Length: 73
Image (cartoon, rainbow, N blue to C red):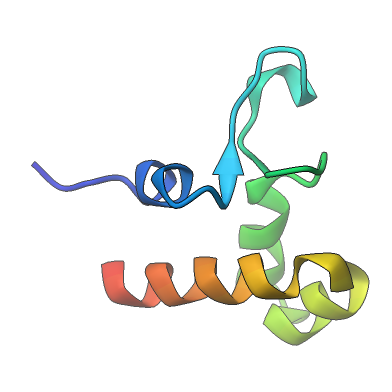
């Protein structure tokens, strides 16, 4: 059975889910920035560079997430 990207990122301490934060959506650890926002940037014209520009404190976790996403697909 394939491992979900969210499970990998959660096990690496990059994201987490808490019902008290953003209604339980996966967010980057220590923030309220949803993982879905990251995906939206990657799928849109903005891309990774714009995500990092808008959320500079998430540069390392974003690069790690992109790395795991590349490995998965």
